[in-house]
Length: 267
Image (tube, rainbow, N blue to C red):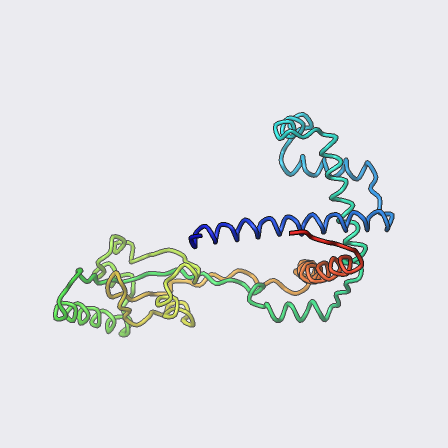
């Protein structure tokens, strides 16, 4: 058997295994639902259907038509929703209700993932570029570099960046003073990003040897969004921590159900 066929066979086997394990988990969960006497009222199913209709911008008739195209009646759909709600209730009862998240846990998560909640910086950039022809000789490239060094000296002497860009830059936007627009760091190449990070408004980089040519970048402005304080994001962090813990505890809970059950898989 060829390696491609073997790989395909393994993928099919893995998919079947995952489906089988999911069916076993659902069966064990349904047995626990019966044992735990968890129930769902018709109004809870009605409310879930209303949420689905609102989220998908569907009327009652449009929902029925969508289900019919899938070969499902509204009654079948309600029964499926009932099972889903029952399983969620059981997991909340057996797993989520036993999770306790303290203020200290939330603060620790916030401190560890601070970069997610601090204001993001964007840079308004200008540039001056001297283009280097493809396959340019070393001597020619050196001459272009020397011209760029003259521009850098003028900048260091205090001459306005915009005026120098208009005079010396080989760019279609030279007339606009080399105004490139606003960029977040991840939109820039690693070389340019490294050159501007740490610089303040009104500062410029050294000469960068880029694929486009020799360039100098000027930081016209730094735009920073507001930091998100702990109080503003604590509820979201609590939910995130809960989901992470639930994943682990759910696997452990299902594992304990399997241990208490007699499951025999014939392959």
